[in-house]
Image (cartoon, rainbow, N blue to C red; front, side, top):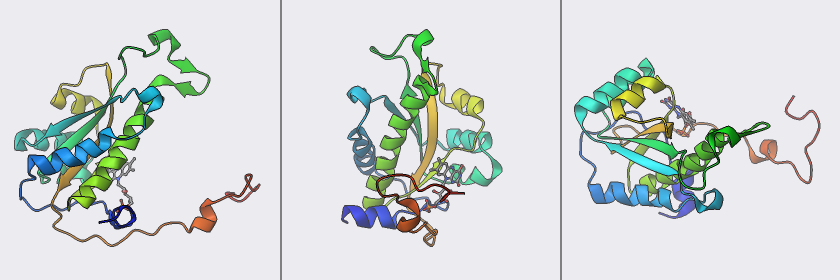
Length: 186
Ligand SMILES: Cc1cc2nc3c(=O)[nH]c(=O)nc-3n(C[C@H](O)[C@H](O)[C@H](O)COP(=O)(O)O)c2cc1C
């Protein structure tokens, strides 16, 4: 599968076959995440792989009701951002104007998570990015201490549905040339 095929063919999958995901397949998808760019090459992403059905159930219970499919996906990965590694700003220097260290780490990790969705697609897996959950409950289920930001959960598994493509804004609506056109976005 070429890259654009994976990008354009990826769908959020919310129904999964019970078939297990071989660890080699999962590892390739996660390794793709490790190739993402990051500020100063800090690579703040960490991946918590959850296969245990009881823990997946607990994650589903910690999430919004529409995310109950978490319990049925054979794998759930929590994407964490390591906030406190060597070279991280001191706690009192983690905010500069509208910039925060937490936000910066989070978008580094989000790039890695996006890479994982694409590599998983190329491996024949479906994924769904999940952000609607009770963060404190998820942290408790996964034993996540303060020095990690919880960026998102992602379900992975072999799809038991073929979701249609969701509409996308035409490029002409997204692109400005040279400068922002006043009033275009209302
Ligand atoms: C930041 C973010 C948060 C999301 N949260 C959820 C979620 O909590 N539950 C869910 O079912 N889908 C969630 N999604 C998936 C989106 O609904 C989905 O990407 C969007 O509708 C476009 O559909 P597609 O991924 O099939 O192209 C999330 C996606 C992103 C990027």
